[in-house]
Image (cartoon, rainbow, N blue to C red; front, side, top):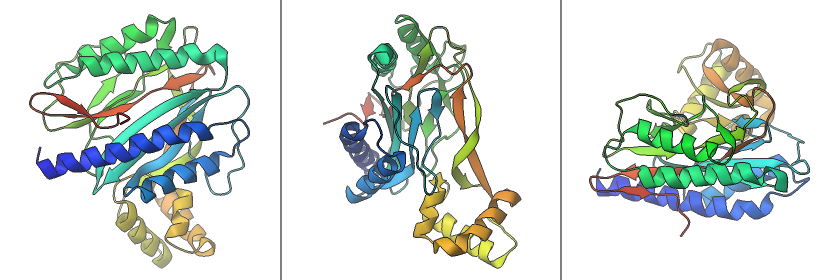
Length: 300
């Protein structure tokens, strides 16, 4: 990996880690989700990076992919389990990190399970280490605390302007010869639910995060909006409320509907634990070098 590329990964990680730690104090009952999302994203920009994707705030049984849509009135409910998943990038080089804030002492065991699983996975990680070894470590740590890993949510490798670059790091033991490759970045992210849960997520009805899928559209306004989306976000995910930064709110709606209906824009459905059990998450980003792994999102 070129030194300037590593520097960008590290800088993105420093920003993401700082924002992750700062946001903890904002996770309180009755706080609007949109206020937290926009604070996280603005804070990333103020620290000299750009959001790599919309701030995810996934509560209780919602495991992933919820960000506030325009005008969101949802608030953090009492005694909830709140996952904040955020990403920063510098010139397209991404840091992806997440925490779970527990407002219910009865659910604290889930947080402990994913944090311990993440710590043990990071200790296993190294140049050319088999991914199956990391996955088995994650599952073992989660089950040791009476919890169950989410079998169809995974960690993943990162590439420039690409969140999911093709390699997955499952949170359950499996057979695979794939290894952590030198010069690559990876997000390791254990997810856990209660021992009596399904340990499996399904798609919910809401879709609040999107990305570019095609570069052509028919209508003039749709083509203009698509061009601005491509210039602003490239292949990275974005939120509908981010479009207000690109075009006036009263002009984008028709073009936006056209892009969605034509498939030029694809959505990421919200993921929900199949039995409705609460889910916890923890996540760090690593860069694999010839002789070690650098954890870019550790708190300094």
